[in-house]
Image (tube, rainbow, N blue to C red):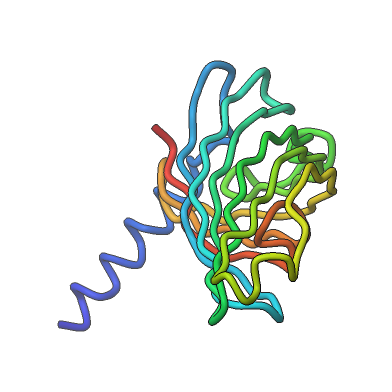
Length: 156
């Protein structure tokens, strides 16, 4: 049992050493939840590598509150600092802008409580890849989830 555990740690460690940032033309799927003062947020998104340092993407998100739901669709662009800062290849640190539309869907009593509309925001985040394709992400700011989010990233 102990030998099996040591072997698994070595294999996962070796795989993590060879993970690379998102390449030009490569896509990455992101899914997770967030933290905010207003309901439970969930999100799914897709990033596309323009070059090794820049990605563009889209995100659908929802924040479920006891009186209604926020639904958002966002486009984003991020600059990835892996090459600039000479970070390990299994990590990712990025910052960028997002632009999207939020819509408040509520019970009749709360229908006018919040405004739907266009929003511009900033985000900063990071990822740690366990393998060449699978990692975890943390991001602050951005989109309907806004306060921050945690999730899983999978390179396609």
